[in-house]
Length: 112
Image (cartoon, rainbow, N blue to C red; front, side, top):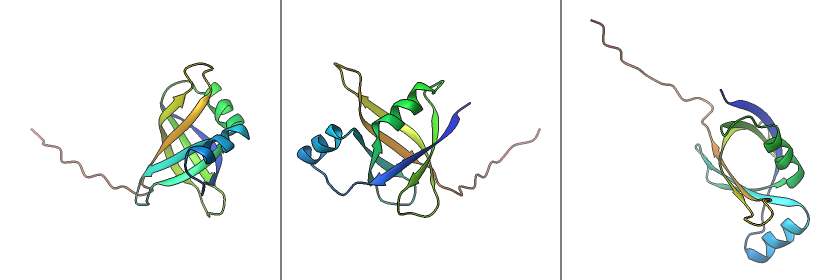
């Protein structure tokens, strides 16, 4: 079963190689949220928060309740991909996959 954790993120306006290098030098990990009904959103998360979350993870499937600064409410996401440095193993980038808040499912079951 997937474990659910809370994580605080901020919107990221700066893009490009030099901007990302400056973020990483300050201890910030770039991230992005895909899926759901919204467009992909660039975010930034504290390296300490990501490392702490991953150290307590018991499996690959982690449900993350993303609280984005400046937005009311939170978004339920799942970690889709984490890019690690091949040398030091540091987290380089995180991809989150947003889930729809209301997604009705209809199943048809044949009876015998």
